[in-house]
Image 1 (cartoon, rainbow, N blue to C red):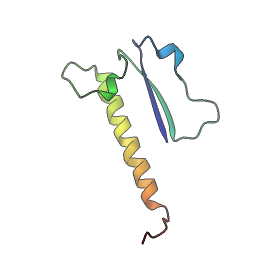
Image 2 (cartoon, rainbow, N blue to C red):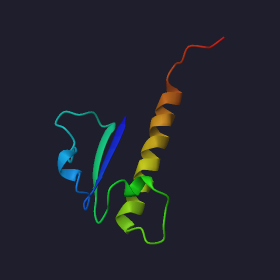
Image 3 (cartoon, rainbow, N blue to C red):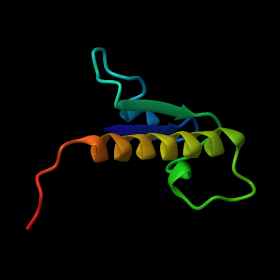
Image 4 (cartoon, one colour):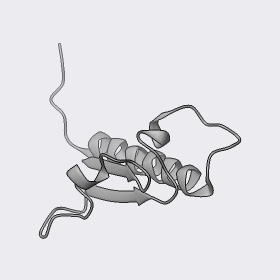
Length: 80
């Protein structure tokens, strides 16, 4: 489970993963944040955030909730 983001305005974007690798599982998500800067989605929310950042944050949160739910459904060994 991986959620990779890059800001459209991030100078490091060219060195990062910008598209989902061919054959990658659905649990790998790649997003380019329009009008976003380096790590903008990982910073605290701000009234000046572009709508694209807010949308990606919601998507990240939903993906994490889904991954936790999937993990909870697995048969885990009982701990002592």
